[in-house]
Length: 240
Image 1 (spheres, rainbow, N blue to C red):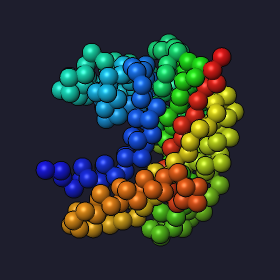
Image 2: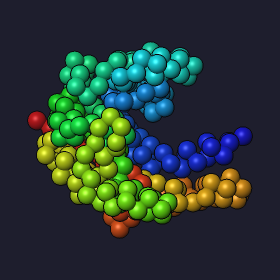
Image 3: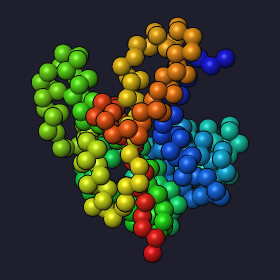
Image 4: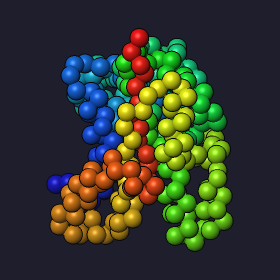
């Protein structure tokens, strides 16, 4: 039986997983997962028959990745490497798909990070990029009564080891284009999910499934991007 937490997680990740799967259709791919940690996404990708390299700075996370891949029977298709965005060129080249989810907002130089990613993609390859969305973060802090924090986030452009940088959709498009990548899709992620009380999803029959379908329905509608908790972008490196 599916547990309440599993239902909520399925709603939170469905839009991104749908997009990733669309890129992976049609043959085995070489996939690089940056900051993939314990392999929540990497193992799912490997289970589809693709070869995945996970780059993460945490040896503990990589050890957990190895155990998860073994338990799911995909250890032959998952490789864990300790490193970060600064070491990508040493890890892989000519990658079909790069997954960079929840990482860009934590680095000091987003432009350099995107350039490094573009450098390991093969011509025609794809970047799957997921970041926090600034407008939703401002709204969340204001609704919680943290008005000063909300005001600071309106124009915040920094990031670092402890402070996550959020992006607007336009900022993300500009950053990605500056790295030589062409944006092919922008999705709003968790448009409603973070606003819906957990008790409703846990107790109301069919609520999780209905919410999931609603999230899918609005994910690519631009008018909802400003209230999405996160943004997901697919961007391609032009073929040679």
